[in-house]
Every structure is written in structure tokens, then in C-alpha cells.
Image 1 (tube, helix red, strand yellow):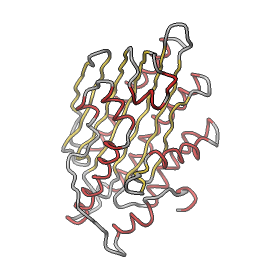
Image 2: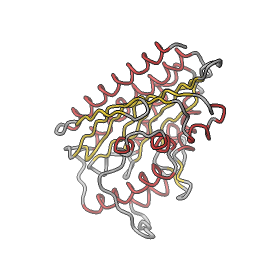
Image 3: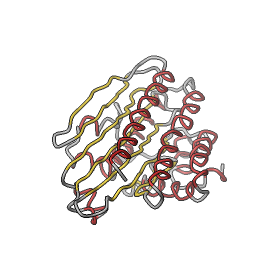
Length: 305
């Protein structure tokens, strides 16, 4: 592959950031994304967009980054020890949306490309990405729609991909210290390079392009649902799980910090308000208890709902 291929990926990622930002501003109907461009000491940079205090979105971030350097970070070589001693280029778009209404789920998406090179050896490259949904008060039709869009995005590349990437998502977003999933999953994949560059890139694009189709209809269905203090307090409590995962388990967060990325941009996925409560247990028979009993575990959402 050539550096022209890297340029093609970067071009797509910037366009994807633009499309998602514009669509979410329209869905919110009030706030707009503020953009900051940043440079990384050592090579590269990015542009971070954050929307705050919207009518629908309490806070959301859509970030593009392209960073490069001479030394692979420890998080990457721990995952792929054969990459030690190579330089790297890493680019991607990552986003998290924290809605105001507890009946709209939090959503996350990421698509990325990585290439590691050294003189006298073939380049090592791969794609990764996915999207996942974190509801507080789940609706079966929303979860089914989310997974139907995910499956439709991948089916043209092989019927085996959706179940594989769905299971990978359930495994990756498992909070080991809580013995529960972060939400109801979606797609996750990494190290995708067992196909041609063109087809691997097409799979990444299909996942990136599917995010809005998956999320916007859920926003429209739930944005006017009435809620009170009880629902809001539970939402803020459950947001704590999001923080725990990102700071304890997420490889992307660690990679960004170890490569000297911009901390504000790396942590813009954090919710603006959150609370923890010691020893919280939902009351039996409540909607809050139903989240724990019926949803915070891997399930075959397309066939069980």
C-alpha cells in the first residue's frame, strides 16, 4: 500500500466527521459544535468538536485525529508485540453522545486506521471500529433497530461478520469489575487486514456510514418522552459506568494518552454530569431493575426481542 492510501482514509474520516456533526446539530435543533484544532508534539494533530447544552444533547463530542511518530506506544506493542521498533501513523474519528433525556441512550462510535513501518520490512496495517449503544431505560424496538442497521452494514461483506463483530463488541465492552456489559452492544472490530486494503477500507466505511442510520431514528422516537427527577438521577448514576470503562479498560484512551495526544480531546467522551452511589441496588420490579436483569448481558437481540 502507498501513502496515497493513507490520504484516502484521512479524506474519508474528515468527511465523516463533517457529516455526523451536521446531522447531530440538526437533530438537536439548538446547539452547534465548537471546533478546536490542535497539534501534537511529536507529529500530527486533529480537530475536536464539542456540542454542549443542546435541546436534545447535553453534551457530545466528535473528534478527528491523525498522529504519527517514530516509536510505538506501550499500549500498541502490548497488544501487537511484533510492532516494536516501527514508526506509526494512526488516524480515526471517535464520538460519544450524551443526551439530556434519560430515555435516549448514550451512543459511541469509532472508526480508525493504523499503519506501522520500518526500513526493510513490509508495512503492517489494519482497520478497526464499531459502534455501541448504552440505554438507561431500554426499548426493545430501539435495540432491534440498532442491531438491524449494524447487520445490514456488514452483510454485503459476508454473513459471518455481524455475529463475529457483535460478539467482539459484547466482549470488549464488558466491565469485568462490575460483571456486566456497558450497554446493549453493537459492533466492534480491530486488526482487520485479512482482506485486501480496498475491501477492508470498505468495511470500515460501511460501519462509519451506518452510525447515523442507527442512532437518529432513536433520538426522534425518544426526545419528547416525559421524565422526572427519578429517571434523571438514575441516568447520572449509570453514566458512572461509562466513566469507569473509559478510564479502566478502554485501549483507545490509553493509546491516546501514551502517544501524547491532547488530553481534553481524549477525554471529551466523558459525560458532563455523573454521580456515584455506594451500594446502589434498584428496587425489585422497577424499570431500573429491568435494565440489570434483562439488558446488561450479551443477548441475541435480533432473534430474542
